[in-house]
Amino acid sequence: MQMNEYCERLKAGGCKPVGGSENTVWVSHERFSMVRQPAFALHVPHAEEIKKVFRLSHAAMVAFAVKASSVNVANSSLYICSDPEYSLKKLGKGARYDTSRGLNELEIKFLKQSELLRSGKQAYGDTLTRTGLSVDSREPFEVSFARLCNYSRCLGALKGDRLAAFLLVTEVGEWASIAGYSADEFLPLRPNNALIFYALRHYLVERKFRVVSYGLSSIQANSKAEGLHKFKLKMGFECISVHRVFTVNPLLRPFVNKASWAFVNGMLKMAPGHPILKKAEGALRMALQSYA
Image (cartoon, rainbow, N blue to C red):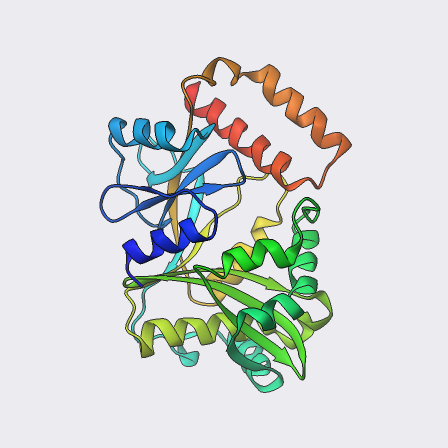
């Protein structure tokens, strides 16, 4: 689908997208912020664009990435793959072995929405737990992922009738972005390797997409990012150092201080796995660095 259709599907899914410059879109994230998509758009948005996003979304914060420089010091990593000849032989020995095992043990296929909603809850929950997050109990898995399926496809790895892992894939124009979830009990079968390989071959080689994005590194203080970083490199993604910018709504800027950051950290001690608190802590920490 093209960007205009993507925006319409976002609206249908309950999001409030705001069109951005250079074929980008701002999308609501975690109820309090707007993030720019695609993640690999690294141009600096004009001040008027930021004002428009705040005005139309009423968000507390907007976030985007720009090229790292001496002024905008690298504070995050962007993962992309754009190899039109991506193949198994280009991977290292360990990645080839793990990928081959996954492909031999599991069936990889695109799933219907009903299949994901029926079988994906375990993979979703296990992934959040591994990364130190608790499952958001305010909205059931079936509800949140039914909304996501309005504008994403699901690529699954199945063992018999069990869903071992899945990727949520967003396709817009010549790019795709992915996010992965996997169940603990199936990790020895290497479902993540098989899914990533299949997705990159499908989009870059077969469908001739320009780029596949695996997103940005986490802003959370404790996210097990090192292991995920190694996995992404192992599977052929390029790591690009970027500067993530967190701009607070001018109306709320007086509240962005060390006291508010300390308050959120105090809340985290009572609920250490709360997903929104963990992301809010990271966003506040990085915003404070930007305003220092």
